[in-house]
Image (tube, rainbow, N blue to C red; front, side, top):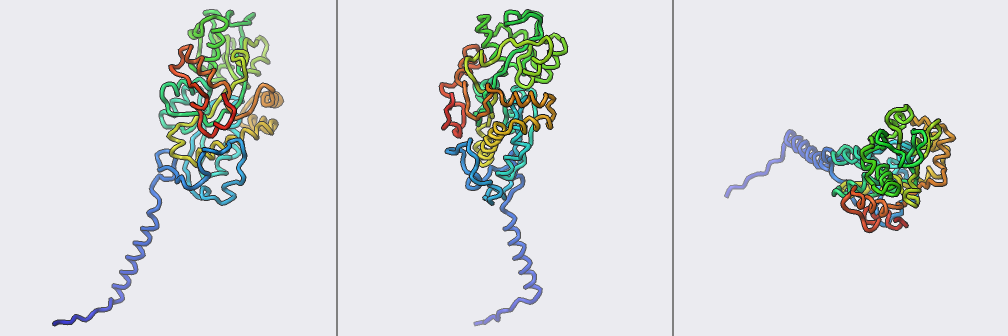
Length: 375
């Protein structure tokens, strides 16, 4: 029987063993994050167990009890990457500007917020489908066109009740019957809310909702305003504040109709549209978004003068007093509660804009709105 004596490791072997152990521990510590895991575009979804919680059962109109970042929540230290917001031009997008400029999303979670202004709802829809933007703010027309075609998105918040309308530079024009074959009508886009409301009024005045379709010219609001005032072939402009009021202050520009008259009720103008995939993959970001937007809406309602100053600082050329008057107009209600969705979509179906319409407003809105008195 041979007995082998055990050998104690020499200093070199002990050093190599300690080095190997250290490398293994370091590797284990670094394995918790993967490349790109902090981004919303192409990264892994956020951890649903941390952050602000799910959207269900939360009142988006109420301010949070405590600032999640200052309160040291789990979401504060997590990198949620980037959220890209797409919107258009005009006073109606004021809460979006407030939300971005006041960093209301960032104060809730650690995320980079970027924005891009695009010319119309069709362009915003294309941006969503192309994956170049995450959340869009648009009129009801392009939202329902996309929804009817199968785009899996819903409304996360209404933006306001606000009348829009049709202005004319044509001498003597008082109704749609005065629009001749040589006239052109500027709208922000085909199937835009302005297009649909013009069709609704054409149904009333002309008996054919699509009677004026051949005279439409798609132009972003600023371009439509310039074309109307320049004496071009554009003799009518269906637009929104501040362009609506600013045009009417110019000699020779008259009001033809406004949308409350056409709809027969106050109605939601623009909405925040959130694709289902984004909401499902990033619940904490969605919750922070709807809370931040509700806070921005309340801030606009309570601070009209400061809101006007913000618009001017961001480049709006409207007179300050006029902006304040638009923001505080009794017909304008800054609210996240949607109004007129079913009525608007039903007409779109009847007039051939879409193939289907919701039977209930909750069918096209996310659950964080369902406790409200929408229609």
